[in-house]
Image (cartoon, rainbow, N blue to C red; front, top):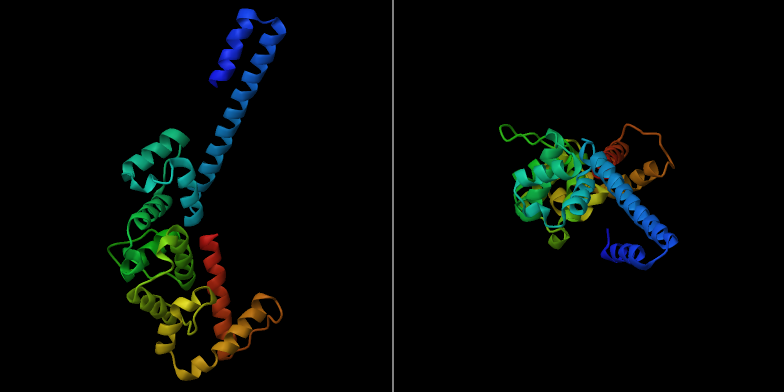
Length: 248
């Protein structure tokens, strides 16, 4: 209770009327009610995010900043988990524990911007696929696109600067999944390396593929033909749509 209300209540008892006392008590009750309501709503919102395996890394990051303070990522993992449990009754499960620790790692370390393996592991963790250090699991195109967005959101100080090894890894992974054109969301990042690894005939169709992609996205023409342009455009649509499910 604020000291100002306490002082007014004491003054009312000392020299005021019963009406004065009732008035101050009503204010105190309203203050306490507002605090309890705000705390209850906050706990529900935090639980909704941290108990949802599908919550995006961006939402988890924003909630941790709100719940623990902007320097939470400097804490020990055990302290983070204990504080979340004590304050909010949240016991992190495997998927979101992996997500939280991946966010913590990214906040205090730049290696994922230059090391393809670290980028790979973050992409898995951010997408709800627990990172496996015993065998290499490759993220999908949607996961790759989403991870770039998440990394740029959490680390704007990096100004979207990725090392050559990571950029090549992105492109090789996309090509391995049958995408031979830079996805619109990461076009500027991947254009150079993609142009070096795909055929000149494919590159000539990039503009047509992007036009077709826009037609599909806007619903202008949804009939997919079995040719290079339509197939590539459809794969772009699938990749960008999947990325939204991971990062929104």
